[in-house]
Image 1 (cartoon, chains in turn purple, cyan):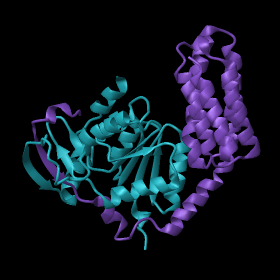
Image 2: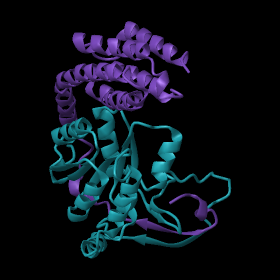
Image 3: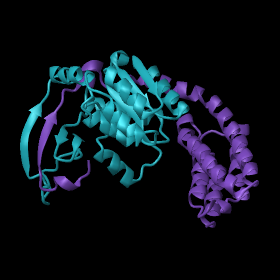
Image 4: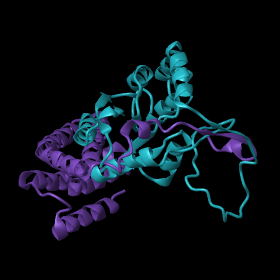
Amino acid sequence: MSDNAKNNGTYQLITPPNLIKARVGAGLGVDTELAKRADAAVQNLQGEFLVRVAAAVSEIAAQLTLAETSLEERVECATEILRIADELRTQGAAFGYPLVSDICMSLCRYIEKLDAPENLTGEIVFAHIDVLRSIAGNAIEGDGGRVGQDLVDSLNELVARTG
Amino acid sequence: MGYALDQLRVLIVDPNTHIRELLRTILQTVGAGKIDLISDGVAGFESYCVHEYDVVFTDSEMDPISGLDFVELIRTSSKSPNPYVPIVMLSAYSDEERVKLARDHGVTEFLAKPFTVDIVLKRLEAVIESPRTFVRTDSYFGPDRRRIANPSYAGNERRKTTLREVSLSRQDISKQQQAALSQDKSVIDALARD
């Protein structure tokens, strides 16, 4: 379904019934009290998220150890580290830890820009997971303030200098 | 007074358990009545064909079929009971090219990961309050990709002729649902095999 064939073509406009509106009635948006409760419910999940961050850090460290064993392993380890970091990245802001997302974004960029898996550098990955470990250990919420953003900037610069 | 969401049936398709649970927590807390969680597009489409969903949330990156393929099945498969359902696509990649690709596959709204409660609810309100007209051409079927008509637009009009304008009723959709139940699974099986 691309744009191409439609440039000079004919078309049909269809107005389907608004079934979802019929289902939810004539209310004016989502109840604000319920929306606040949803916010609170998500906040409650934050503690669990920190446990996952700690587990992810351990898993990434284990992958790095494995990566040292052979080039073949290194390919799979790089892929696995990217997967773990990407999962945390997608969850971070949603669970109230955007700093985790920013750091994982930097780590994902590093892995994605590797020309070859043999260039995977443990030090750069460790620099990222050390910060993640600190966030999990100290339950640092939000964007981490000025210090947090300085850390993210430093990691981004580190990644920019590679490759 | 807010929406009566208890009658709502929602399908969430995402390979990530935590994202599925997160979305469920948000929607359940605001009152959504029935929420089905599925981890892949094949099972998601099977579920879509047997339940009457009001809105679908799907990730873009999935196996064995992608989120875009899943959306295309809902929009164009002869098995699809309601090709007009609002579909919100979640993606960790929100660059313009990806958003355009999603739009060209029939996605109603785009939701970039990571997301917040507020943004999820805004997308839900958008599909409720701003239903999209659908367009059928030789090569596209889905929500009108021109969200706002611009009367002052002076450029070339790509769509030269309107064949006809059609307003569907709930009964029309029900007829499609009945017909769809009798279709075979070949389309989705073929996609899953590819």
